[in-house]
Length: 120
Image (cartoon, rainbow, N blue to C red; front, side):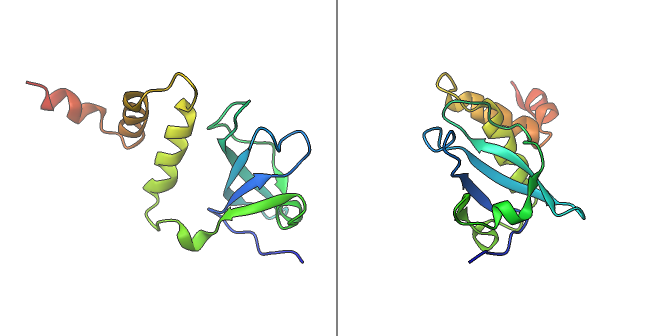
């Protein structure tokens, strides 16, 4: 049974070569051509924070190909949420520190200027 695909949903890629990588994709838009733009939110052996080639919506809707991990209803309505997740996943990695994540979030929200003014 296929499910409805929506913007904001998070999927785990169940392709044979992606299972061990625990690759997770967030849907960021769905085009008129029934293809979805996604970005890689988590990947143990690959880049994160990058857009994937467009994926057919019917493939995302197939439980045998993609596991739905997070539905739209569990995502905050604030559009800054996706901006922050994208920024944080861009620095994700074994060497990333909490400060790296904070800087990425700070920059994504456009707060660089306020940091300079707040310094003593």
